[in-house]
Amino acid sequence: MLNIVWPVFIIISFSFAIFSGNLENLNNSIFESTNSAISLSIDLLGSMCLWSGIMQIASKTTLIKNLTKCLEPILNFLFPKLKENKKIKKEISMNMIANILGLGNAATPLGLKAMKSMQEENEKKDTLTDSMMMFIVINTASIQIIPTTVIAIRNSLGSENPTLIIFPTWLATIISAIIGVIIAKVVINFTKGERLK
Image (cartoon, rainbow, N blue to C red; front, side, top):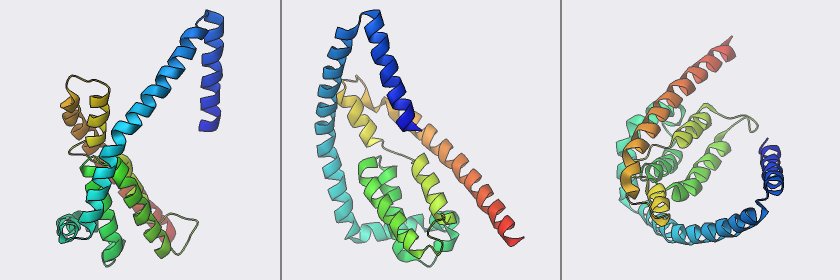
């Protein structure tokens, strides 16, 4: 779908710029945007490397083990079929901790690793398991206590108060996570009932 939407937007933008006589402004904005994108990428690279490294070090210590124990009741509620699988639960908890700290860039490889491990346990390779579906919901909602990446982006773009985003982020991510989990649980229970018929 996006491979249709984006080209249409680009064509409309160029057509509008040509017919309204703003082709020069369009060219200038393209160059300014590429410069901004490169500057932003360089600014975020240091933060991403730092936090990815910290998460890698934390995975080798007892810190993650202790945090996984703290998350155990939540993990058992969200992923009842993984109660006995400590390896996958550790990978999921690392991903959740990275998301909670707002480290989306560090959370992504951890999430892919957890999903790969769940896929290895999956008997039907072409179908998502209940745990995989719930994991996608949790990652999409991505509860964040400290939205580090967003704060870094706001700071690099010259925001006067880059941390102003914290409270709205709490509200948005917590509400979306609660609603997402409820809907996922309903769907999982419904499909389970359908399978038993």
